[in-house]
Image: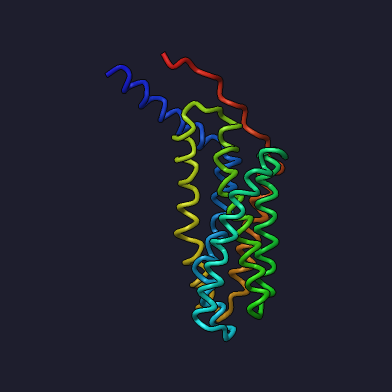
Length: 206
């Protein structure tokens, strides 16, 4: 019973800690409003440009291929250049790729967007747990990462839906894409200019 109480208490501490780390939570929350828009709206946008349904589906799959590559290669690079710095690079890369999306009007440019966005998205996914571990140590890291990922849940729910509503009102994806890029740029600012939280002190496991 005592051990269970201690573990439950540790989980609460982990949750409080991650919410107090406004830097990471706010950056992931704001970024997620735009990051998941391509997964829902890339295919409809491609279809609006006269691209076939099968090719549009391949474009969406290209994001997944790029994401896999990013998790392997950018995750490895992040270990060498520093995780905090790499997180900023991932945000900048996703913002830049969304700018490409805003200018896309044919299959090749959309394919370029999908590859570049996928790579940096994959790197973002790979580096987040490492950033948390660097900041707080290995103790309670699973609980901290789990709490941090609730930020992404809000963005996943709201971002694509809001983009769809904006398209219905304007009959254009220009505003949703610009807003997606802007949210990612704001995440860059949050991570780059706010101070990093101090690491949690190591605790006994007795």
